[in-house]
Image 1: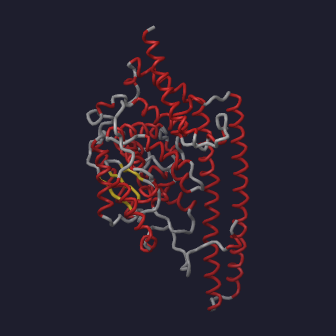
Image 2: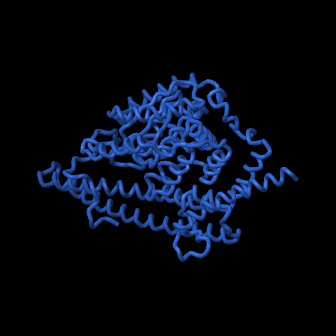
Image 3: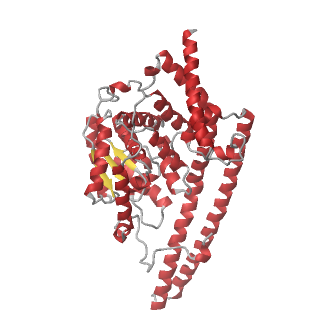
Length: 474
């Protein structure tokens, strides 16, 4: 009876704490809203808000199921819209290519007028093809991400209260350490997977292949910014299960990404730094990538595919989606963010690789960020931001072939609930704000935009940046 009462007091205290947060958040909704906001509004809320307030949201199973059906209908309608737009762009390309064909039938050699006309057609065709492929990627990858994200939030509203109650019971009963990787007090001493040192050669080989194939963006030539990221990554590595030296490189790439190679090689793109809003968000992504190294996910994937096959698939994927334009390696990695470096361009199901790796990295990453003194909720915040991004680039980047959102969010936030409380966890810092400002100024310079980047094929030299003519914009 004493244990039961203690449990009730614990649950009541947590509920009261959540209610206070809810009271503050309630003020952000319209003043004339006398009831719980509708599901259409709630699925637009951040995961962190819903996780705090799920216990207070009362919806029947019938209401939730009906809303899930509405979301599927809405997604279907959006898919048809994108198909229509893609078809229109395809027809425009077809018409221009017809003009190009007629031009080629005119004479055996170009006159000066024909050369000018050919160049004009090239500079119209390529951006239209890129727009067409962007619509296709949005329809096939971006759109599912947006609606998977909304469906996951419905699942969270329905299922998180029971999940949280289980966590509280496990903590009360002393069973919390029996969970997977539950020995957080032994981080740095425990061994997750033996043989990290054996992965160094594999990582070095992969990096050599990348550089030889000109798939590696240039390194950032900013010592102060690089030093800041190195210091941040080292702090997390020192509080992780990494047993090999961490070797970090900051890449001058606008792609929003970070990736790790087997053996402790970590690459952080400037696009990721620019996108992160707080230091804890950047720390969360870096911790997630380090977790892939400590759990040896990369090495286990490499057993399933040779380096040569991986790069062949990378070129195929990039050619399919970014036909005709300049493509940085970040674009390749963007297709399957969060696995690890080269694994992002692979069909994980085809290779037979377990998608549990992502959940492992989410859980371990939360532990490493927490152990290093950062608020582990930063990763959830960044994950949510990218899942809610409009368009195809960011959404397709981060979530292609990943486990369902609900599973990842619950896995990460469950771990956060299990972790022992720590005071003064870092959310943001002055140093991060200064680095963000420094990076922003660098991005404004013309030289930032004109640096040579790897490409699959070279396009024509157009006088102006290739754009879709006004009359062709949908």
